[in-house]
Length: 317
Image (cartoon, rainbow, N blue to C red; front, side):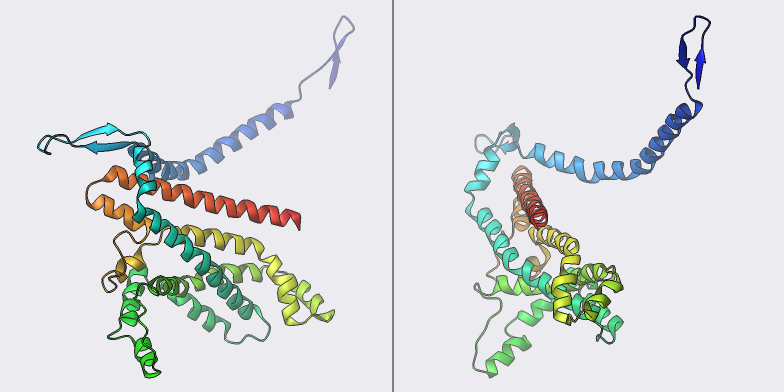
C-alpha cells in the first residue's frame, strides 16, 4: 500500500505479510536445526572426532632412549610415520592385494546381483519371494560365522570341494598362496551379492510398468528391454552399490582373519586393517593410526573418483 505524507511525497508501507514470512522462515530454520542436531552430535562424536584424533596421533611416535629402561616419550614425528608406511613393503603389499581383489571381485559381484535382480523382475519369474529370500540369506548370516563355515569348506582334509576334485584327478588347495585371495573373493561375493541384488531390484520396481509394456508392444524382446531400458534406469543404484563395494573391500578383515587359523599363507598384515591391527597389538598406536589414515584417504579417493567418473560419463551420454 502507498501512502502520501503532508509534503506531497509518497512512501510504501511495509506489508505485514513480509515480516510474518520472515518469522515463519526463521521458525522453519530452527525446527530443521533441532531435527538435525541429534544426528550432527552423533556424527561428530562417533565419526569426526575419532577421525581427527587418529590424524592427530599419526603425527607422533613413541621414542625410547638408552637401553629402554627409561619411560617412553611421545615426540612429534611430522610425516615420519607416513614415510615409514610408504617404505613398509608388507603394508604396501596389503594395499595392492586388496586393490587387485576389488578390481576383479566387485564387477563380478555386481554383475551377478544385476543378473539376479533382472531375473526376479522378469515377467516369467516364479516364486519371487522364495528366491528373493534365498538370495538374501547369505547376507543375513553373520560374517564371522560365514567365514568359519567357509574355512571348513576350504580346509583340504575336510573340504567336499577338494575331495570332489581329487576324484577327478585334480589336487587343488583353495588355501594355497595362489588361490587363497580368490577364495576370499568368493566368500565376499557369496555374502554380499544378495544385498546388492535387493538394492538393484528395488530400483527396478520403481520403473513405471507402462514403459516396459510400451516397449513390448513395439516389438522389443526381454533382452532389449533389459539392456536399453531397465539397466539405464537403475544406473544410480549401480553407482551406489559400487561405492558401497569399494568401501567394503577396503575394510576387508573378517574373512582373512578367520581363514588365517587354517591358511598359513595369510600373513598377519594380509590386509591394510590387519596390518593396522598388528601395529596396535605391539602398542604402536601412532603407526596404526597412520596406516588407518592412509587407508581412509585411498578409500575416499577411489570412491570420489568413481563418482566423478560416473557423473561425467552420465553427462556425456
